[in-house]
Image (tube, rainbow, N blue to C red):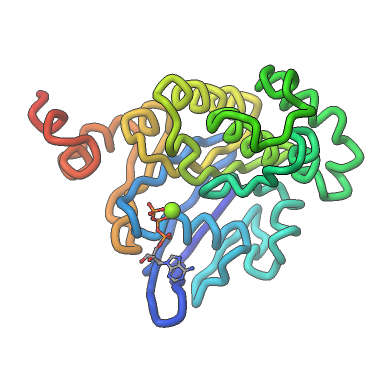
Length: 240
Ligand SMILES: Nc1ncnc2c1ncn2[C@@H]1O[C@H](COP(=O)(O)OP(=O)(O)OP(=O)(O)O)[C@@H](O)[C@H]1O
Ligand SMILES: [Mg+2]
């Protein structure tokens, strides 16, 4: 469904991605692991049409995504929950959610879209008239996920959705991703909490210094010596 081949990207003279090749099939949850500065956000932003790669290709159901502007990528069913949420703090929860439905197809169905989001995140229904800046960090992250869902995506990409959240909220957000996936949406997840990400992902990729240095099923990556040393800490390495 999503096919990325030989992707190279960067900023000015700074290279951020080197020869990245990966794919995501319909209905999959795929985790993207990597240290700070590895190029994870750059990769997601390339797919979303927010960063233009130097070379390489990105195809979605056979269509060349690099030929499309960002808003058309969303219309095709690929939505991003960006790093840092990027919400409009002074606007209400509901107005922020509705912004996610800007495409004509989803705008016409925005009532149904809101009901779906409010069913997933009941607390947002209660606070639909509150300004986003009045919400907790966890609730704001729910708005960011909800806004992406308002685009009725078939692929939902999330850039560190649990960053800065308390462990209880991390679990809640990740559980919602499983529910979203069960409803038929593929998920591409950048997540600092590697054990949590790999426990729910079908597959994962490891990105370091802009290159894919590992890939496998969630279970295989969890057992991989390099992954354990680099991402799961010294205690994980010593466990049998
Ligand atoms: N707007 C920008 N201008 C210049 N360089 C950038 C820009 N954004 C990212 N970079 C550089 O590109 C490289 C990859 O950054 P990127 O943000 O994609 O990594 P990341 O894996 O998402 O990191 P993090 O875990 O910190 O979010 C880094 O060297 C970073 O400094
Ligand atoms: Mg990032």
